[in-house]
Length: 191
Image (cartoon, rainbow, N blue to C red):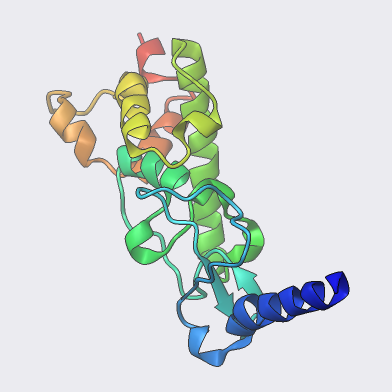
C-alpha cells in the first residue's frame, strides 16, 4: 500500500511539475508550478522565476533576448539582490554566465559583478555590510545599503556642483568607469 501511494505521488509530481516544463506553451514566459521546490525564498518584492528556452535546451534565469536596462547604482543594488518581479527576472546575484545568451550582455554582467564587489568593499569599510542574505529579497534593506555607501561613489564633476541629484542621475556604468578612471579609489579617498 505504501508503494502504491508513492507511485501515485510520483505520477502527480511528474504531471504537475515536469510536464509544464516540457509544454511548448510555457517557452516564452516564466515557469510557475506550485509543486517545484523553491530554489530561493520568494517574497512580495522579489522575483525568482525560471525561464525555459527550447533553442538553448534548458532552464535559465533570463529570457534569451534579455538586455539589461539603463539604471543607476541604487537600482542596480536592488536588482542585484531582489530581481524584477514585474518582468520575472531573478536577482542578478544568482545569474550564471550560462543564463546569458549574448556576449555583449555577458560582458555587461561581468562589469556589474565587479561593481557589486566594490559596493560590498565600501560597505565593509564603512561597517554597514550585514551579509548577502540580509539584502536578499528586501528592497528597503537595499535602499539603506545604497544610502550608506553612496558617498564612496560621488566623484567630483567638471564645471558642475557635485550635487546628490546629479549623482542619482548617473548610470551604474558611468560610476564604474569613474571608479576605474580614479585608479580604483573611492571618492572619499580623493584629495
